[in-house]
Length: 127
Image (tube, rainbow, N blue to C red; front, top):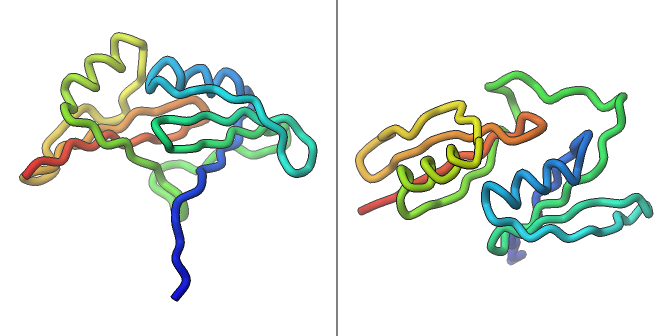
């Protein structure tokens, strides 16, 4: 049987370093400059083991689709206290597309919109 494990998420941005700085400010991401296999520069970030590659998108690259859409919709960060996380992110200027709410017993969620229209779900699981 083949075993699969997580390696990375790959984003495209018109301003990769600006996007990386956002993740650094909001989520404490470590910023690492890198080079892609095609020799082009890339910015990599590490959010507690979640590796995200941020590649330069040229002007011809189309904007992302309108929500909801098929394909990758968002990725999620688990937090111990959603209200505390939301307050922290708001104090740093984060834009919420969905305020914290109870989805069902034992699950509270919220959504943050990062640069490039990247949607990030925040989840608090209990019980």
